[in-house]
Length: 284
Length: 286
Image 1: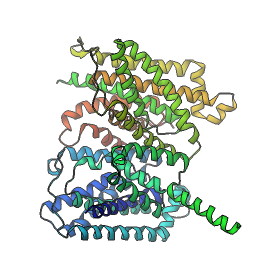
Image 2: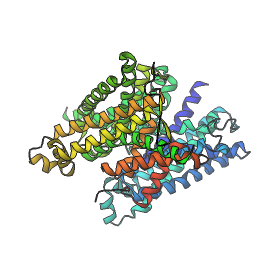
Image 3: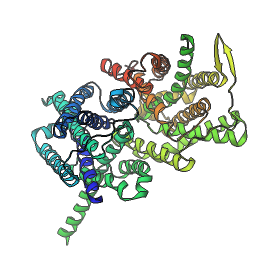
Image 4: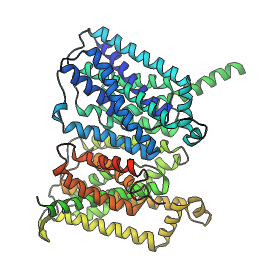
């Protein structure tokens, strides 16, 4: 059924977008290669289950593998900042696609086909994805209010001041990268077992930009804004043929116009609207 | 393929990278913007150059018109898209620029079609022998162009009033302005030069490959980003060295590294390795 697939796609897109929001939004570390970790999760889960492994073990495995690589890339964020980090993470994305293309055991250009069905039926799979998405939303909301969330926020606002205040910047940055990339890996594993086929094009620079667009449109660092943006942007190409045909044009224009007119995204627009409504009520 | 062939191939590629990357580094040096949409301007140059050549029949005339016209396009681009967001935090311009680039590629696809366009009569395709290496005239033209254009740029920057104003603005914009330098003018000239160089590179790449496609800006542009970081963001000399070095490394890398990495990923492997050791790039200005 059509609605089931829409909800499934929406769910793993929300997880993927929130995973980037954790790194770029909460902790302020820009990443232009996040699709690589989505890909690492998808490929490791796909390899595992096509080899006869259990789907249930594939999910934590994908998270562990993606999180491990995220930990390594996190070290880059300790060495370089801002624009340098943007280009380095973009490079990580290219290294991933460049590596996968040349590897026979990863299917090279052809990808991996025939990923086995999780064997639980379409509706339970959708429910599973939705439940995991809900858990990730809850985790994001919790994290944002926790001590760690405040430390992330301090680093995002002003790293040097945060360090002066005694915040262990390196530890928190690495934590953000590990959490964020592990969740991207989870989203990738869910994606792979939904489409049952992975190829390197699904995880290229454009995919990194697409997920960045979800975070930017939602509002960098805002949990609900990103959830709404990810839900809409992921299913619109499935609902409207026009959107599917001109997806990249729309993403490009969205990225630009949001940055140009409302750098806070949906979140700041909603707050502005709310302030206006509540302001009128108290005035009246 | 022997070593001298590989070296020459690498240097030709390096000259193309240099033409693209110098513009990027100029924009970064002046405005601290990672101008990703530079790649879109490169592709525009390729389309305009190829279509004008097919229309007029003269490659030389088409080349000159393209370079000048795209230079002016770059100025308009800056005025419309970057000037209004200059005082926002740096990630704003970066993300806006990515959005512009993605949108530009899509617009080319819609306007010119997704399939490739070629020259009706490919110019400069004869081969000549230079120092024992057989070379296409087009490749020689690339090297000559890079030397002339970048050399001209060096003279402009070093010997003229515009160049002095330019360098003053790069080192301290507020101070330069207080000495009566028109910052807006310097920025316009900067974008004109950067975009004209990108257009020149675009036309030459179109010539060498004898085809233009909407997404052709992607790979060289990302590499140009890697190059300007390696060269120490904003440093023109460092950028030139990094561009030529990358061209040669890739050229040899396709033989020795092909099993492990795609050719296009070599630049970033090199970049990441260097950044981990020297986070400020190879030739940072201190």
